[in-house]
Image 1 (tube, rainbow over the protein chains, first blue to last red):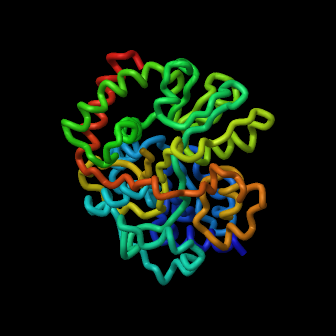
Image 2 (image 1 turned 30 degrees about the horizontal axis):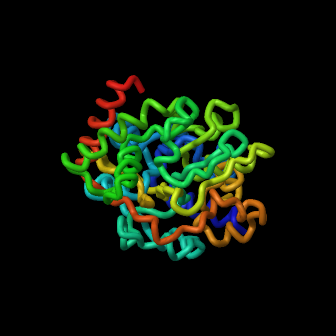
Image 3 (image 1 turned 90 degrees about the horizontal axis):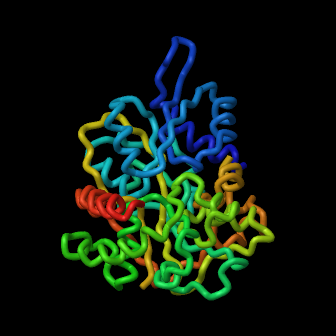
Length: 280
Length: 66
């Protein structure tokens, strides 16, 4: 049931945009995050539709925009974080969807539908949602980690892995200062500078592709990672008691992403990533 | 299909029909399905300031060797 659900959703989006690489072959050019679209899914899609999927990956929204600029009119579907959906809409980079051809949207949790970045749901549909949070190897870290100050106290220098995302680093620093994480101006950046100068040298691994790996192989004992990566660490890490921090320590950034067609690409503005949440 | 995605990349699956087919262990993973609370604030689009953020952080990283 669900398999059909997703395939209908994907094929409804994909087929109108497919291009013929050869007279007998249809190709879907898919631009998506690393570690986000299983090859089992694209293989099943090809098996059921006959459409070959050519997948290219990126590990940041900024990279995604650059790839769109580098190959205008090339990609059929792209998978930005939701704030970047807004960017692409404003940049007239998207073709609108035909909702009548996406009947399985009814299966999507209402809390993920008609969000502010695309209130009429004209250009995007949900793929997955996530957060960025702090995970701790409690074999190596006995003390409670409740705040950013705990993470970057200096005790764990050289044992921290973090996603390689500049916008999020600034958001973490702003959150630690009790400032709005969307307040980006010269004054707010200046406030974060001493924080980042203290924090960044303590991070030993910057990895947006598979940051949970550093937790499992021991290169890091604290991670600031995508929630899906944290989930993998939790699932694969046993008996390593990696746990997500709770309460005040949890900083969550949504990476709710959307499949949507890219029809034409003008010069696109660079805009922030993700819907994000951050604690004080 | 959506279950395949959750199995390999266990983010929060917004497809409620798919969620019914996930295992109790998958649904109990606190990283996949966290309890969000009122302290979590949305990060919104900051427009062209993103470029300024990129340059700002990259400069610091260069200077601290990270």
